[in-house]
Amino acid sequence: MKLLPRFSLLFSMCILGMLPLQSMAQSQITGTWYSNGRAEIPCTITQQANNLVFTIGNSRSNGYFSNSTTVFATQWNASATLTTGGQGLLWNNQIWTRSPFSGYPSIAGSWGLAAYPQELYPVEQDNTFFTLTYQGKKLPGYFTSANTITIPEWNNAIASVAPDGNSITWNNQVWIKKSGATTPPINTPPVTQKLCRAELSSFYFAAQALGTVWGRMSTEPPMLTPDAITACTDALNTLDATLGTIQCIAFDRGRIRNLRGTLAGTGTRQLIVETETLIRDLQTVVQNLRVSGDNNVHISALYVGGIHLGAAQAWASSRQCLPTPMPAAVQNVIQNHLTTASNALAPYRACIPQFDLSGFGRVNLGSTNSILPHTQITGIETQLLWSVALSECCFTCTGEEWNR
Image (cartoon, rainbow, N blue to C red; front, side, top):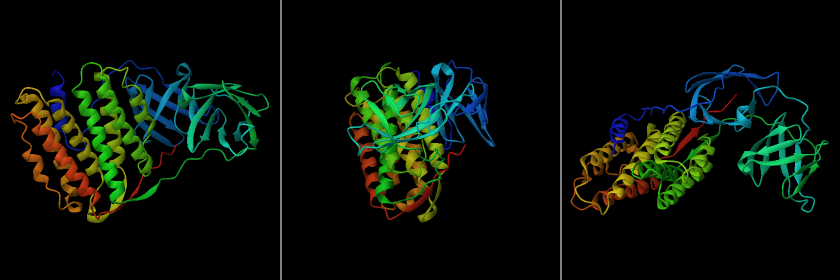
């Protein structure tokens, strides 16, 4: 229970409160970089301990290391991963390199297996960086040498490119070029989307799922149990899938998958830090959405309310079938979660008039029945989900463009 004072402080913060990052050993990445290896597009990074400033052209963003090999640019709402021994910094739409490069073969065009002419895999290329569209998904990749490429999302699979650029050899198949060059990659403009009951209820439920991950990790032993890994994986899958359908929330979903992939091999203390960072950064994105709609409310209320209700539920769940009443410190953590959720949802009341906010204050945390607090909190969650799902409120939201 040594972590409780930190949580108590955290939960008493207002909605806009930020979580401090833990210090960690970082690579030194200060200096001049080059976008997609192009000498004519220099970029700069300045670094002071964990804090970073990225600059390319007239665009600038503060940032930080989210772990020892991943950085996050706050204003750009984007993360990047150090590659090739720290000589590359891979974003989702470009790669920054320590040195300029040129002379790569062109792989822009449509590719596929000779035996399946109907299957086409388009590749867009800008010097050392490329994007492959495979089965409807865009996968970033880059040249690791003059004739080899890699795609990180395919477990860093390596392929050889023929000198003439007409074939790509993977370890289990050979692709041939089926058509010429396509348009080079371009930045995607901001997405505008209408959100009504289906989207809003899904969004609330995904936020609640992320909150359960946070709370579950906080109540686990030094390494997550198999049951916890399964539960957290399912919750993160829910979040990933939901953000895939709400496209105006321009968040790097690769960060969710990265967290999911480390559940089994990372200690809970570090997982808590990474989860808190993800929660905070996603909250910033949601709060920065340009939203217009009914009753002059903002969907960030659903996000914060869902996060803290989910965390409260996970903490209460951890106390089932244990001696009662639960320790005062645990009661305090749960109460702080419930208070934060209630305060966050209060402005949204105009869209869910049938939902009773006073239920937050009636959870009996000091009960001698160890199951009662969890039952009451899950009841609030269910009532809130139905209220959002039946609400007549709709919103139009526009995400910020990640433009560099």
